Amino acid sequence: MRKKTVEEYIEVIFALEREEGRATTGRIASEMNVKPSSATEMLQKLQKEGFLQYESYAGATLTESGRRLALELNGKHEAIADFLAIIGVDRAVAERDACQIEHHVGRETMERLERFVEFAGHFPDRPGWMECFQKYCETGRVEDCDQCPCGKSGNESPPAFGSPERRI
Figure 1 (cartoon, rainbow, N blue to C red):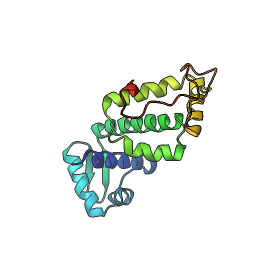
Figure 2: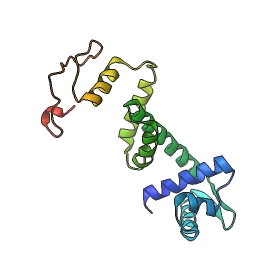
Figure 3: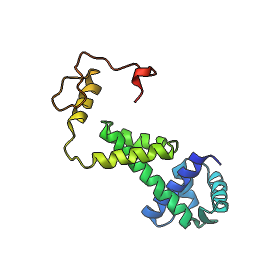
Figure 4: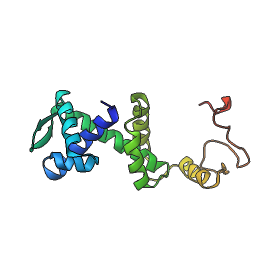
C-alpha cells in the first residue's frame, strides 16, 4: 500500500468520525473520489494492518493505532499550514499545500518545522526579520532595514541556489 493513500484514508475516516459520528463506506468513497468497491477493498486492507475496524454496510471505525496516526497527521498538517502562513502563503493555499507536503516530509524536517512554528508563536507581532522577508518576497531585494539582524544592504544579491555560498 502506498503510504500517502493509507494516510489519506485515515484522515478522511478520522474527519468523518468527528463530523458525522461514523464513517460509512459510501461517504469514504465520496471523500476519496473512488468507487465504493475500491474503498471497501482499502478498508479491508487497513483493517488487516490494524488501523480500523470495518463492517460491511456499517463502515469503518479507527482503532487506537489508527487514531494515533490520524492525530499525528493532523499535527503535521497544522504545523505545515501554519509554517506556510507564517512565511506569507495565503491560508487557503497553505492548507491545500499542507495536504500534499505532510505525506512526504521526514521526521527530522518535521520536528524542526514544528519548533520554528512554536518559536514564531512567541512573537504575536512579526519580528523585524519577517518584515524584511516579506519585503524581499515582494521586491526580490534585501532592503536596508534597521530591524533586520542580517546586516545586508539592498544592493547585495543572495547566492544562487546550488552554489557553495548558499549552504547554511
